[in-house]
Length: 591
Image 1 (cartoon, one colour):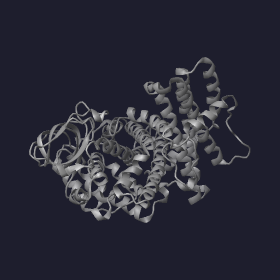
Image 2 (tube, helix red, strand yellow; image 1 turned 60 degrees about the vertical axis):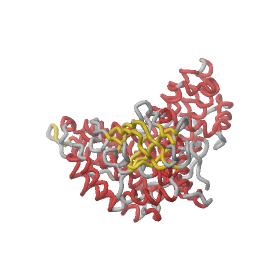
Image 3 (cartoon, helix red, strand yellow; image 1 turned 90 degrees about the horizontal axis):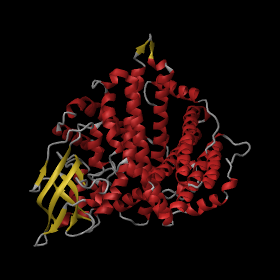
Image 4 (cartoon, helix red, strand yellow; image 1 turned 45 degrees about the vertical axis):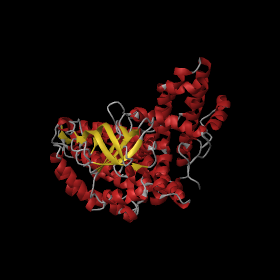
């Protein structure tokens, strides 16, 4: 069965056997995860307070130790000193390291945006010279894109590179800001415009080149241990052979690396969420009020369960797309594509899902850490507790890798552009549905089993999303991109649909693997998730239609919304209590 293209889930169904779920991790993957966890326990957690005092040397030492253990080479092919692991395994490692607070930021910046532009787009000589050392931690990397006047609009940067008279160097001048690992990176991937070019090019710049000035670290709200600083380039001579790819190819490199960063961030925040949930339940199982443990209170159980439900849902979506990427990489490799290009093209292909994961997962973590502080009460506000650090560190994730506002708009915009390119027939399917608007029902059939019912709901969510996209495009045509509030409504619908469908497929597969009894608790997660998602989709739909549709059309669409968001009632109190009770009994996140 051929894998769906990016965004195609909106018009096609997915078989559960084509998705990967974390419960399928093999022995080698579990061993890698344990190695990452052991590293956090022995090297990172004992040093959190010290590294948060902006000790650059300590952070550098920790990063190099992780390189000695091979953790930096998980995604790098063996011929360049790495282990050549699958994308699923890379995501598993990213998730585990994600529980490492500011260390995870420095680590992921090095392994991802600090290394992979050279790995994916560099030539053989550049890979041998730099990637082999980056993969082992012998040298450390940074990624220099953002400028004072160029944040979300990366191509607005004015850092410039002029070819020297002898043609041997580019003379680099400009300024970069918010550069992670700036204080100790040995190698930087720097984006600049050559001469009068309108678009960016990318360069490998060694930090010891004369003319580079690195400012002191910024004082930040969170992730204090990661080095974040401005870098100035004053007539820096960069050898011409350090141009990555072709002249003017930097913007494509930057966008592709951002897609990769978004997906990896989706996994990274899962580790932070799971660690924070464990901290929450441990405290709830120790703290007494009115003579009893607070973990016995219904309100606390609600918070604990909701933390689990949202994290489980985000995790389901993250690993679903990870396998899709692995499958596409394999196909590109079979077609004879260079490994680096095959990898980044496969990742970049799933741009819709990358944006979904980035937004959904980072907002899940923000919810989890916020409720963790609340569960801890006054102690949650104390710097003595890990949740205080988790709360501050979490906030950057909604800004990293493109703000959530930008990524939310990208979800629907990219899906529509992919459809217009002919990747899948979004508008044809939408037009068919709109033609039968008066006849749309909830689609319920007799004798549905549990999963048939849940998949019918997700199919209905898809149909509703298609209807509203069609109606909005019919109304605004090309001007829809300027109606950001409506675009946001549509994106929320797409995100909720993808995440709920991913969760249904995961629970269905858990039952296949472990039996009905093992799946019963996960069905409670699914029941609450879909019940809540239906309400969110209904609200977003109504907000959208009353913002653009005529009274006549709005009435018809409102009826369709009612039919397509109707789900069976759920005893959410008991479902959440059962989820919380398992967490309370385990005293650690084990879902």
